[in-house]
Length: 343
Image (cartoon, rainbow, N blue to C red; front, side, top):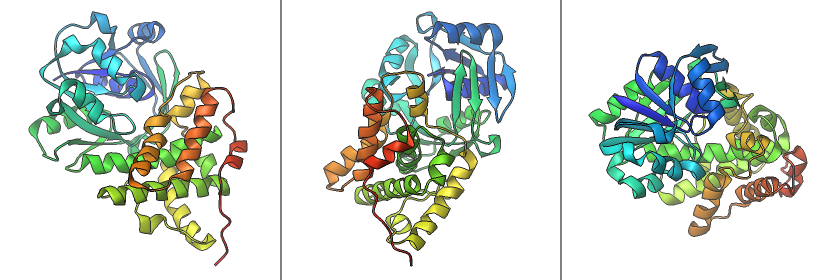
């Protein structure tokens, strides 16, 4: 299969490099000149919890020729549609677009190219963009995991073939419930990545602070209530299962139980920071906060479910983007965190 990757940043470099290493026909479509030059002259370099420099084929969008069988999308959601439009000439009647971003971008892609062309994916590992052609893997290599599935739940030959290609870059599970998984991951990202971006810290640092850990638990509960109201079934992902029963806590003892689940989840990505925080640290004026925590806020509003913790994260991160705040643990003062009795 002829494949392409758009969004050749932290995860795009890792994914494209490992697929290319396996000998697959994979084109990395790159807008940034410095990144393009580094990838073509030096190869894709992975550091951190994996160490390799791998030759890859990188091309500007306007220089791409031919039709792709599959396009893996790893852009941020705010850049996704413009990136796809830049290679619209390379999308044929049988091309499949695989959405591997945070949040729920499938509807946006389906609106552009039709739902039959879309396969959903959820990535359970992280990386940090270091510089042109270089990405640091921040999740243990053996813990890397991608869930993949047709939007209608069918297990088709095309999704199996695409899973084979992705299996060179990660463990892959083909599932019949990808939307449940993607919403579960949305809740997870809202808790971990939202607090990482708001506080300017790693997931592990957010966990070790009792107040921020309670915020993560509360965000998980808000997401669990929304999933329940939507009739979605949460999927356990590395010990994370956002059900109302599992994340309800009324005292310190019950919060400790929730903390145990969060600790098991964060253990494999303890030193990881949110991609949103990476954008903030790079001086960007946009990030995916409205597509992650903001998605729970908007869904909660439609369903009549309060989301004060998610809403506070959205407010803080947007103020950080406007330079009105800095990402810092000082931002915990903006959360209303109830005191819990011992029991």
